[in-house]
Length: 116
Image (cartoon, rainbow, N blue to C red; front, side, top):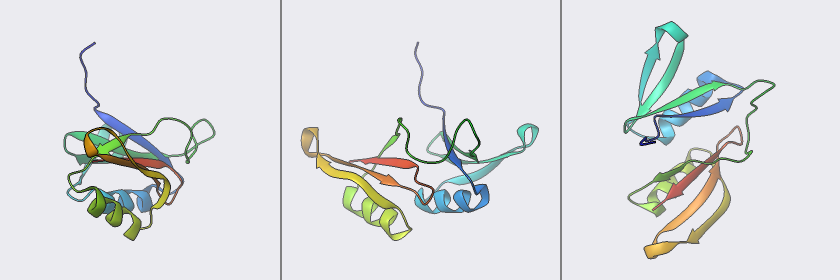
């Protein structure tokens, strides 16, 4: 299989509020709409960030898989996420080549990873 990530789904109880929050978190993300699925999503650097309703099968919160986003300025990115209401969940810690990584929680307790 030769593939790249095309979409990240984030499950939340309040889709409009989460769309606003994630658009603020990922500066430069553009809202797009898929009429056939009645889905508004964010397009960010070629990846669809789909903010979808949590339900009985997939609830909001940290439960296993975390997507890590590469950032150019780790300190600035961490500060930005904290300023808009994310909370630090793990780290930051040193990793290879002098890089750092951490895990944050959005207001719905979903995890977002930063690496840089």
